[in-house]
Image 1: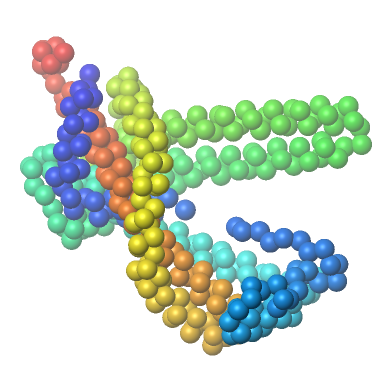
Image 2 (image 1 turned 120 degrees about the vertical axis):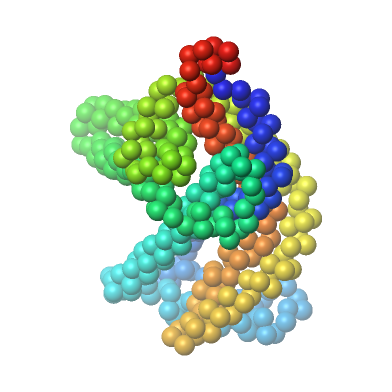
Length: 370
């Protein structure tokens, strides 16, 4: 049986004595993690129903600000209101917006994957190497270990064991949602009520089953990804041999998962207090955050201004700058999140190594260890 106490202490030692891992932990915390709605106006004749009234501004408001608000309101009424009043005339615009959002999502997904999976692979291999030889690697060496076929295989594993079940869940929920709708609008009240109850009950069962499945798959993933990164196996071999290893050591794996779950709950409670304590730090970091965010925002404004005009250019520029503001202002939480990622990954890597070591013992040695 694995020594859980020793593994937890060793992972804590690795976290505080191998600080270059923090960089990869922050990268994982940023990438592992990924609307506002407008109100309805009541004026019938205008889509937004909003009219600018300079009298509603506080006394002493800067005239330039008042003029900007008035121009912005006029621009929205001229260019945005017609879209809501006559959407049938803006089909092409909607298609372009949809295509742009899809392109943005795809680019974000690619960039996120190119950072996350090499970082995860690097952490796995660096911790494993440290346990073998006590050698600490630098960032460049670690990144070279991460930028490999293993990182691509980790992505494929997530696509198979996480992506496909999620897609199936969404399709099933869409079907049940349609069944719920048609049951609600059914002309036969008895049949409709029975169908509605059955559809809602089925949705609850599917949601519960999906949550249980994702928990189980997340546990198996700890074995799959280490088979890929540490033993250089392909995707099929990693899934097959990872499953076999889990079956042989399921008691220790489930027990370690419960320990990690307890630590996660404790961290969540502590983080609530940390957020409150760090509010002064967040406020201080707003200044450098605004400075950093202003650079991409101004560049975006200059590029967008070549094709568009009016307040929309400012809105796009602000939306581009906001992530940079959040990254700088929220950097303390990102660092803590990076620590959590490194500690959890190290715990599972040490667990994996110890399970393999115990499996390689002779029966006499295993009895002595017990």
